[in-house]
Length: 544
Image (cartoon, rainbow, N blue to C red; front, side, top):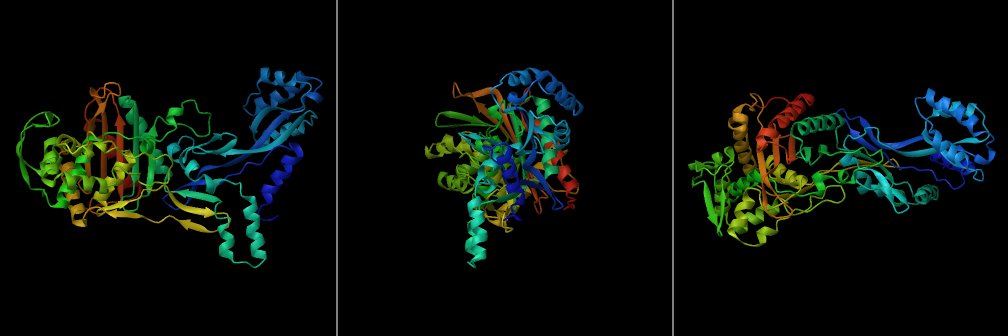
């Protein structure tokens, strides 16, 4: 015990000597995982000192302050004068904290003054060396009653593993070994303490956040966010949103703490058309060359729905439905499938259900309109209006188009490292086979055609890399009137590549960007910026 937990008991002894009521804070580490396999600290425990004043032993507060303040100034810090003298005036109090989280160099100089009325006490606290990077994924610590515990993100969902309140079980682990008992039963009592290694690649995460900031600065949006995921495994390589926060600082905007990519739901608009088309292909209701007569508008249940521009296209194919993002085209697909089959596929895509991601407070999508059995509700759902899902929920569904039709559980932790030395890797979890592999290939081919021929008028096409993608523009609902705003939109964009063997899927969304209507205007450049970065960073070979 003296060897394995040496530093812990030294801290406990030090606390008992200087502050009998103090406790020694400890907690497991959270790591990013770089592409070369190295671990990068995302959350750890940092050690410093509390500087305390004993007013009972203070004969000249001004002299003490002058001596300390000069050392603080040399260290680039400030010892607040008014606060110091207010505490020094409490002459019946033997202990007043005048500074905290002080580094070793400054403490050594303070101790060198040999002031009898000043003491230095070790303290430890949660430290986030990455600052705001991946804050919505990592989360933060906070008080819940009297308990200082994980409150958001991975800090919350893995709190029982990261917490260090199980000393008795750790001691029992060694006792059982020395008594010759079964090791497996012994390890089970301590396996609840450890560190976690995330799937987040720090350089990719940093680049995603830079792109989000740049895009948000252009459009002054209400919110913006993005997810980069490996569609074959469900590993989330980067996840970010604005407004953001620094988990190591005092929080002034509590609304920024919730993860909008996981905890909120939105009407996603036309990216849902890719799912509708895939379902129609898989059910055998349509093929890429199937045609219909597009009249521009259609009345169902006494309500009119139209293409985004209200214009008729005449006889067009299913490929053109995706190329031109035609509302009436996917309504045709839904009608050919029938309501029962359409609803079955959407539920199979995981819409209206939690993904099972290892984060707390995950929202569940709202597909209640599909229970009404009205033609208009199914029609609007086919192009992503009238139903609401979380960004993570739609990302998981869209990943099935890229990975051969599999519904994969997304996750942020790739490995758990227990205090016993044991390690547990998080394996890929296939939740369902939603589409035939051939359907996955066909919808991918169609989405590649969208990029090559229509996205940015064909300017987004990459000569040696095939990219499958689709934009989405959804009208936003006024919470007061429950009607759609005439001028407020939520833009979304998803794409994956290389299309022949997808390794990366990017999802982006921006809520209420100013002075712009379509997602193709706001999110095409950010998507292509991220795509080119990933291709270069991971040295992805061309596929055509």
